[in-house]
Image (cartoon, rainbow, N blue to C red; front, side, top):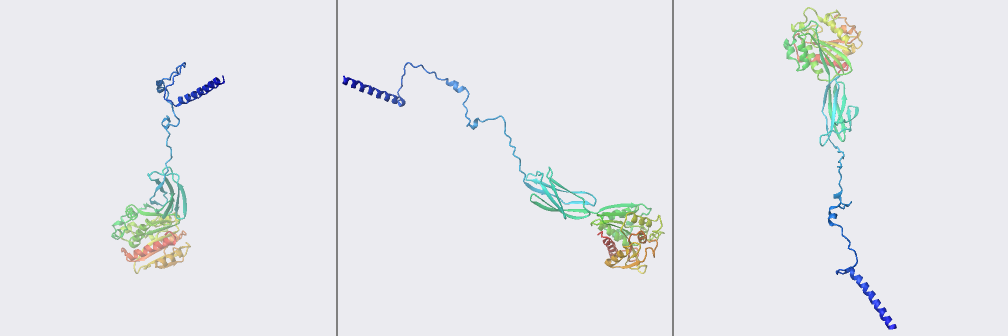
Length: 401
């Protein structure tokens, strides 16, 4: 009985081991396993899988789509490439503009950049506008100035030139002619616009030229009071040429041809000596005295020539000690620097009551008579130079040049 039990037990163990081995063989066997009594599991339609919604992965960049386009709004960085400027010219009393244009490599203006301008000792700081332009407004007295600028690493300089303002009025006092018909005047005319206009104006009346260069003293000059005294008239034309090209500090009036009738006839006067009637109302010389007073002038100079052996008969400047207080010192200054003689009267009008300079002096305005010696109706380079020199020292004494 025990033997049968052991045999059955051993058989059971062997069957258990066989079952385990069969399970292991199922996992790795290529044989077909047939199972009865199991319902068939239907497979999902492959076509349905292929035609259905596609499986999408968040990691696939190709599947990341959007109907919105992302704009590339990165702002262009403008790098300053060029600063453009140019010299400026103007006339006294006329505002001017100096501009600097800052551009990038594409030629487009750069806005908002601070530009430093320096004109002499004055400093200006101005930003460029939407077009890249910085504008410096200027209105200086006559002169030549240097404008220095700096912006974004660029530096440079330009010139700002202010010329004297020149105007001409024709005084229609019934005194006219054509002084260009006088050969020595025509021959000695400087090539200058204003000289030409003054000469042409004598056909209508007396030309009065006004030169303005800024705040300062006012000086009035005349020549040709006696028609045949030509060197002083040529010197006056030379002065007009100078004043139209060089800056002054103040105002200068010039009548280069006073007695036009006498000039065109090559005579001292045509019946009335203008230098003897300045105290008589209505005369041309008296009208000049009134203009000098009206324009509130600080000084006056009347320019003549004198014949050898005549009175005064030498290169000389004449003035008076009174009533104009500065007349004496002005006379001394001109004589010293122009290297001419001098004569100072105690009181204006003492010798010639009707002289222009004396009647100006009587109004409290320093006035002098300046003479150079040579025969009438002649011109020499030396006498023109001396007469012109006295004109310049008259202006220098009054700090106009």
